[in-house]
Length: 349
Length: 72
Image (cartoon, rainbow over all chains, first blue to last red; front, side, top):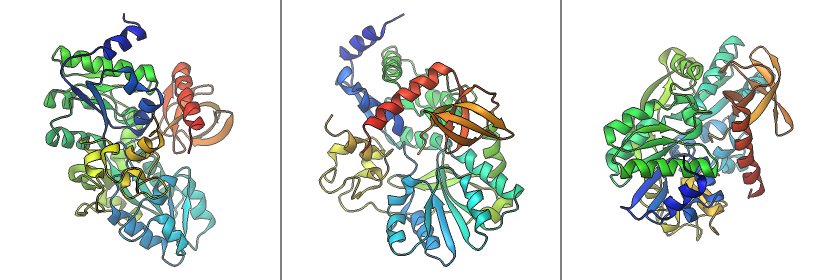
């Protein structure tokens, strides 16, 4: 068994072919900075950040619809705090509030039940954004709406799935050698789903924890696989992630949602990457299909190249000069889990 | 967005429970897991999504303590 010191030494001294590893989880991106991982490994091992933030890839058309609803009489939008600064084509939710819109930030979608019951004269819509980590909670919300016979609460979905996005990147970006798989998404979907990707695209897919040593161990596993010409799924976060995932949560998703094509801001349309309410639950849907959306990024913004791992945020001409968390030009700067937001916060390191 | 925090189950009432998260007591939904009193769990957006070993929960809490120090 190798010690952590030996792992670090071997990674620091790596002098083989350049390796690009993409992480697709904002918490991993933060931890890589926090633990100075880049300073501990060879410059020939490049860590790049992929589409690990569902807020950042939400289309401006979706934001426009949410804003439009929030401006309506006796209407109220409920959402997570991350969504407030995301710009639509005209305004963000924060700007809409300044114009008189009714928007409330909640800690949990389930808190919407109490608000709807206590305010029967108001129509509520929860702006339901997220990856598979959050989708089962919206399923519970629909369950609770039904049980409590609530008529003034619906959801507007922009729910995305990570496997089609990883497939898209493998199909279209040939410079990514391996993936550090997302932690909390994998808690729900399990690690078994990455095995097919590893076999199909001949790349290592490693599930890792969030501590510095977890990430170093995952990188070491990836480098070892590449050097020995292997391409396997490896679960190195088995304390939290199982082969089949959270089967109760997956059953809840299957009960209420079905897949469809979806637009990812900065990327485009990815087949079967959305989860939308099934037709039999249309009564709970405030209008959620934005698959046909086509958008162009703001002038100068290179979020597309950032999300697809072609450049680091610091290579964008707008980064930190005109684009920062208080004046986010591109979507990756908006959320604290967005790639550019994390790089901005850690720009000194 | 997908951030999840560990906590400890201190009370269970049907599909709802009280958890201790870094000395704060919060109400959570436990419909997605099978849990018992004293279990360490992973909580996302008001729902328990996973049951953890104590050591794993403490490791994740360490990361959050670090992130908190560095908040904007």
